[in-house]
Length: 220
View (cartoon, rainbow, N blue to C red):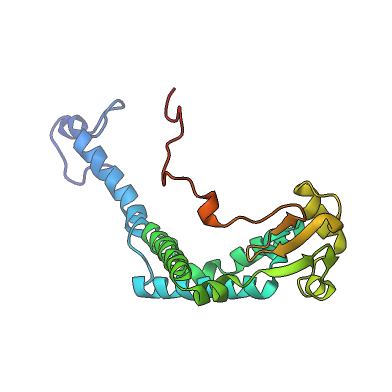
């Protein structure tokens, strides 16, 4: 840009930067800071109040727990490809409800810490009080007794006879007649007890040492 004030001789040309001229290091740092400042400003500070993020996480958590409880144990233990697609769609649907469109790092950490803390609290309460465990996880359901199938329980839990046979084969049992009992656990898994297996109390199964280190653990 030409100088508006006439300069004697070549004074203006001497002040113009040449082709190989570069700004000083301090100026380059200021330019980089000015470039990244808007990005850093929106990265850490949450755009939504922390209390609102925590409250949203609590509501979404209990909603999903109730939805999975109503869906039945089959959704947990006998998950198919359709059930996996459903869970992925649900997670995408509740994403905005969880973070309120807040894409900041602090907002995501607040939601994650709230969910982890809430899950730990529910697990602790379920450990201390049995009624909380039954409310959160449900009760086990007897499917087979002395080799006979409880058809009503099978229908209520939406289990087919083929799925029952498949679960028994995974445990090395080929026939339902060989089972003393088959129980659908609260986590959706099927556990079977053979007729020839005798249950033993914990006092007979307990090892005299409460903790025993694994030999060779931690060695290279």
